[in-house]
Image 1: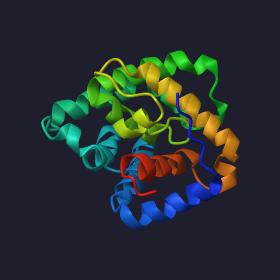
Image 2: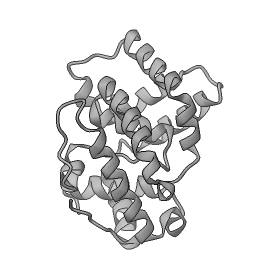
Image 3: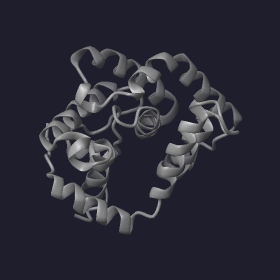
Image 4: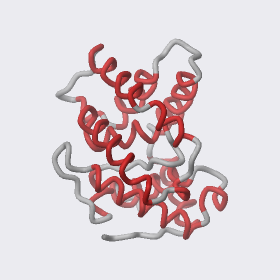
Length: 200
């Protein structure tokens, strides 16, 4: 498995490139705030609707032939309710804290989210629910790390392995403390700029 290890300087450069060239970052920030509000039970949007703000923009291709409707949002809400206890627990954790005991629950939860949202949408949704513990990926990023995505329902172990990669990268860099911001978002910006878009 390829394990690219960017430096702090690489991540800072990616932040500049991403901020200049990827205008959809505003939807990530909006979705992050909306999820936080929904989890507190404030505001008028549900957790599923808050997540959809990101999925409908960052995962547009998935919904091209699968229009989102009320039943889809209801299924997302049920999925969140089923795993609310675990998601609440990991929401406060960082990727650096991942251990072998996390592999099974991550695999199980990812598998259920993947069945509804696909492997890319599942990672995005789970990241919004635990932004410092559960990383983002897309098909090109997964492939760049030797984890080429397979059919829906076959990717949960790949996601667990990707978490180990992200943990290793974070520990080598010095974690969020070395950057002054979320290391997983920084790593995703680097991966996106380098592997998804080829901007770096």
